[in-house]
Image 1 (tube, helix red, strand yellow):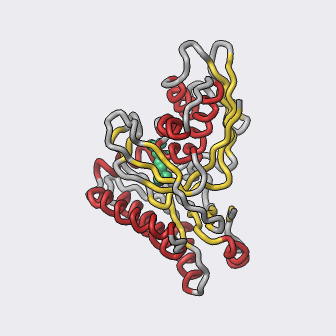
Image 2 (cartoon, rainbow, N blue to C red; image 1 turned 135 degrees about the vertical axis):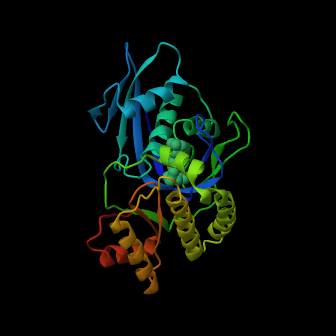
Image 3 (cartoon, rainbow, N blue to C red; image 1 turned 90 degrees about the vertical axis):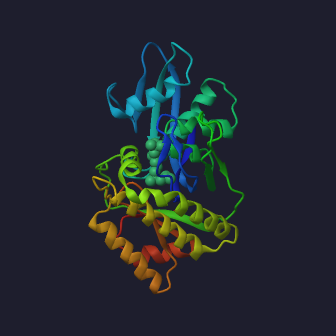
Length: 304
Ligand code: DP6
């Protein structure tokens, strides 16, 4: 069987867990799905698991294999072995949220192979246990992840928002496809444990989220962009406050932020968000895409 799930990029970020094992978040978050993602193929295998990534066999002891196998072990029938083939349309581990689409596609494929017939809501709860943000990749468009309050995580799932906005786009501005210096899982833990700025985060998210929902309903593009930038920069500020400090930005990242702000001053409606990596994600309307390509001719852009 084979299943596809989209990459999602958060407009309101998930950063901080109340349960590490189940990936239960401290706050809600809200994302937008890209038209690209991960396709995962799954088949039964004789006596051991086989894992490939973009066509390359992964060792049994590799971090990638271990993470997938730990996840499927929670859900598969005993004594069943699998061949898991993951194909990403965008680079793995460059802060481009490939684990989200990967675990969501794997969850959808398991639903098929094991004939679970579970609903997207139930699958979201399962995918979350592979990677928190994966629970949002079960859906397209704008999606909110409800943090939930139960200890078992049964009320922590994502749900699509009823917002149709076909002109709304997000793209990538890539400076580096290298593995990040610290993975988001560790960085998140370190932030919660050591950053004195973390105590302000739940309130920042609650306020940004309420404004974001309203701006999305009204299709108020500049509001959406401003809130998204504010939320991302607040998340990075609190990471910088951790001990030792976490700084994903490269000098290119900072230059690009200034470039986005300069473009806005000249009337080009473009905004950015950033995740656990140095690359920028651009937020724009469809009509602005040709202008961005013309005004940023030397940038490594993937615009949709
Ligand atoms: C910065 O979902 O990758 O992209 O639950 O530990 O697998 P784990 O973390 P992950 O974290 C994503 C963090 C983020 C923000 C977001 O997507 O909301």
